[in-house]
Length: 284
Image (tube, rainbow, N blue to C red):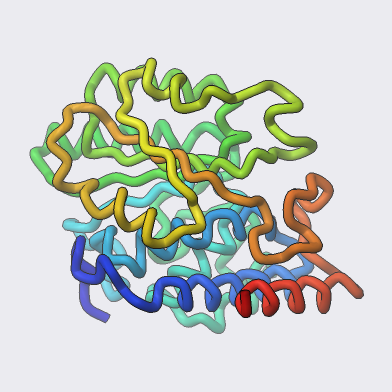
């Protein structure tokens, strides 16, 4: 597969269809392994599809270490099955490898591993990926490279102090070559974020750190492409944060917006319920 260049497929007509395919792949991967953060994956599928299949990120599946590549940092590393599915679909490795997710003979752990082709950094301890992304963005600037750095944060991850330390650093250095996306699904490990410690007004918080803020429906591929499509050519000196409002467990009604499903895959009778919900969501 040849390199994907920014903007080359910015209005791909099959992004919705691709999202449906990746949802199936991700769910089946976790069902077979009997583990995986299914609901955390489902909330960010369209975001990942827009970045990779929408032509936003410059990557080369045949040469994962290509010097000219953009860097994507999945800071919410528990959503690793979704990224693994995307990378397999792009051709970074054989999709059959997904059958060995979270198994001793496989190359994938439950949390993200940098040893997987196409993965830039190990993640799982929340709050660390954002700092890595900021360091990469600063290094690119110092080296006079125009490679884009994109990072995806979970909203529960925003409780980590290192997130706001990094935001202060990014705002100070005006790292406008860094795009930060917040998967705003309103749920973390045990409850809804606004019941635990309120995050809103979230846009105001990021703006106070010197970010340009966009807020969109994170399941709307057109909206995602509209805001991501100009990320590389922005003239603002401010770093960009995109708050993507999503649903944790999107497409699987029996699991969506239910804190009990954090970090779990369906088993037993729930397997067919989850599959049936997913098919119904595609029909709608």
